[in-house]
Structures are given as C-alpha cells and as structure tokens.
Image 1: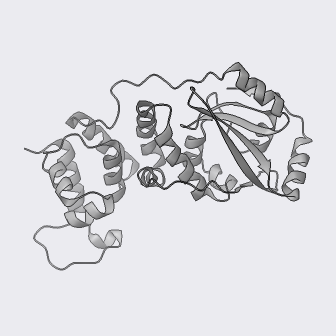
Image 2: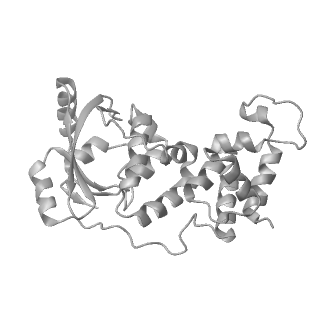
Image 3: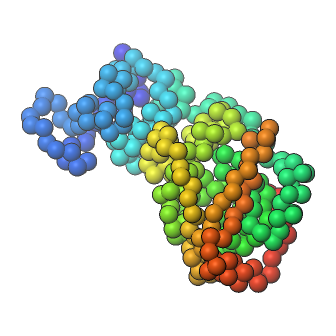
Length: 277
C-alpha cells in the first residue's frame, strides 16, 4: 500500500522528461517521465531506497533525503513545502513535532569582558547555528549597511542563504556558504541543528540543501568582503571555542596594509558600544 509521500514523488517523477533536467534520452520505455535510476542518482540515494519510498515501504525518510529529493525533482517552493508536509503526515521526521529548547544565548561575563578588551577591534560571539550573540563596535562597523545585524536575533547562516545582499558582501560566497552549512553538524545539539535545518531548507533551497551532506571540511582561508562603503577588505579569522557553552569567539584581523587603512577610515564614523544581542 502506498503513502501520500510515495505517491507524490512517483507522480512528480512521471511528469518530468529527462531532457528538462539536461539528462540524455535513453530510448523507449514503458512509462513516461524520469527513470528511478536517474532520480536516485540526482538525489544521492540508492534505487532500492527510492523504490521503498515510492511504494510506501519506508515511511521515515530523513530531513536530508527529503530535501535531496526536492532538489533532484527541481520542485518549486510551494511543492517543496507540500513534500515536507506529506513526509510529516506519512510518519517521517522532517520537522520536529515540538520545537527543541533553544540553544544557550547568554554569553558568559568573562567572555563579554574579553570582547571589551578587544575594542575597537573586530570580534563576535556566535554559536554553530550562526546566531550572533554579542559583538564589538568594530564588527558593527564591518557589517554596516549589509543587513546582517538587522532584526532582534541576527543569524549569519540564515543571512548567507536567504538575503541577496550576502552574495554581494561575501566575495567568495560559495566558500562562506560551505562553512556555514558544515558548522551545522557541530551545532549546540543535534536536535537544534536538525530543527534549524528543517526550518531553513524550504526558504534557502538547493544552494543550502545540497551542501548539508557533503562533509567537506572548509578551508576557512582569507575572508574577502565588499563593504557597501566601497573598499574590498581582506581578513583572517581566529576562532576560539568557548568550552561548555557551544559558542565561539571570532576575531577578525586585516591581512594587508590596504585593508587596515580601509578599516581605519570606516572606523572614523561614529561607533556604538559593545552589543549583546
């Protein structure tokens, strides 16, 4: 007996012609649409597993598998949401029925004191989900005009994947996107990481979901930024873990004299004070 999830995947597969996805025509076949072999290859799963999903013999696909199928089928946003809803009512675990406890947002007083000592330098405290928890005035200057710190609970991961301004701000956007996706595996807890991933995937789309299971350790080389005020900035990052809190302190340092001079010019504008978000 089939399931709503399996029926939907099979119907979408039958409605897609291989050439629409840039796949070669493999000759005549008994049923229309995309072959299981091709869909499975695009989604990164086995044909046998795809068959179990379509036939309703697997009712608990993971978040990663559902997102991969959505990408492989090139679903529109509304179709992606429908696929996730069908996975939920079929019995899958694509979204938590109850949101887990949020990760710790309080920053220890000793860490805040460290930030104050770093003024007017550029430093920020985050967790692995990308929540920006506290930052120096120098970090606010570095990100001014980009939209990153807009709102009451800024999040770098969400900004990178959903705000068009991020692609202009980060010169090497693909490398930064790889870093943020990889860091979710190191999140405050697996429950929070899975919940955040499930929430973000429909909005962020394939640029986000295709990175989740690559497990490629990012190089974290020189960070190049196009500041809205004009200069291109080149920075190195020192990452210091905050033990016990699943947080990290990141300090940004200029790579060259041109960047140092540009940062000094930006800092001439009026600055705020250390901010805890």
